[in-house]
Image (cartoon, rainbow, N blue to C red; front, side, top):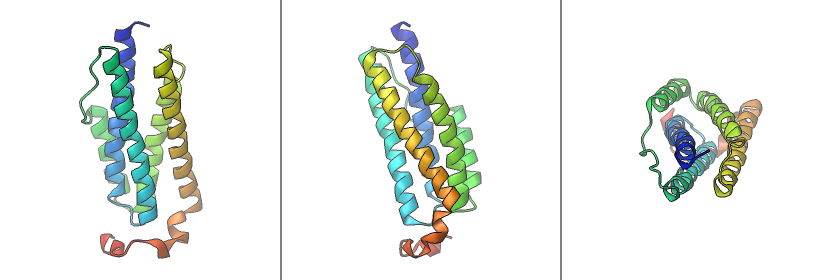
Amino acid sequence: MDYKEITKKLNSLIQLDIDAIHAYEQAMKNVNEAYIRDQLAEFRNDHHRHFRELSAVVQGMGGTPPEYSPDFKGFFIQGFTALRSVTGTEGSLKAMETNEKLTNKTYEEASSWDLPLDAISLVRSNLDDERLHLRYIQTALRDRIWESRESETRPGDEARV
């Protein structure tokens, strides 16, 4: 695979992370529990790091990473997340579960690309993050953690409902 093809593939991952950042920001608006919102913020920050680190790899190869804005698919994901999360924490988590399944699938495929060592190591590290995100969200939904820790909402959160 030549550098032009490699940067094109890496740019698709960068765009995926940009879209995920915006989806997390949308979902967090409707999460009432501070401890869940904080966890989603950490996942959003992971996507920011992926964006920065992958962009540096693309630039190091002489390529130009995408601008920090959602593409058409990103607007669709953001809209889906907004609609789904209107119902609150559970809807937000379900929307992010769908989004993280897509992200996991894409990173899983990318982990088998023929990339330079530094790029493939980064992709595989990011995949580990994505698996963690999905596992947390699925566990939170299964255990309905927002119901068992209602007393841990942030003061003023009840006004957000």
